[in-house]
Length: 166
Image 1 (cartoon, rainbow, N blue to C red):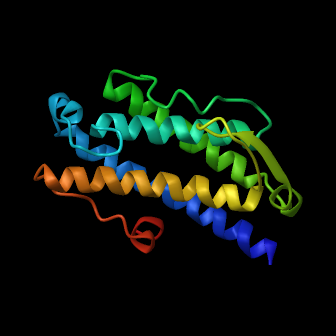
Image 2 (image 1 turned 90 degrees about the vertical axis):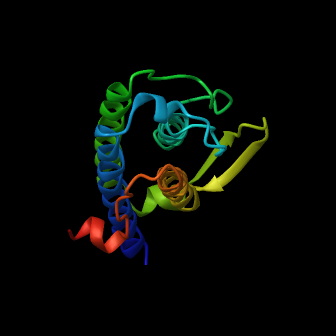
Image 3 (image 1 turned 135 degrees about the vertical axis):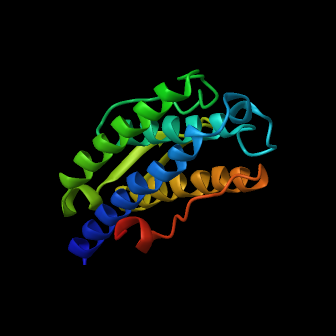
């Protein structure tokens, strides 16, 4: 069973990285002002939401690899320039892909104890947290997709089967 789950997580990582490409490509024709426009979303702007996906991913990757990353600084401005944010996204997607290639059943069966952004200490299984990590990125990328549509931008198709098998 865990072999199938590992394969599934690898597919989700491929999907995650693949879906990021057309979303970021939209911004080749999208103005910096539009990236910073208040869209009333979870993180106010498209740029802010894309940044939050990156920050959240780094927090979870640190937890998965035994490092520490505080989850209390979700509003920290990592990259003001969009090209730097895009480059960081590509690099992080590569790191995530490399990491997922190295996991095994023992990793997924273990637990992680961590402090969430509310200051609560939690303990969850790695397989649950891995699913959350990947779902979290999809969730916020969907918000960006919605904000793009509301701005009148032609949105990319992000269906999993279309992204993984173009």
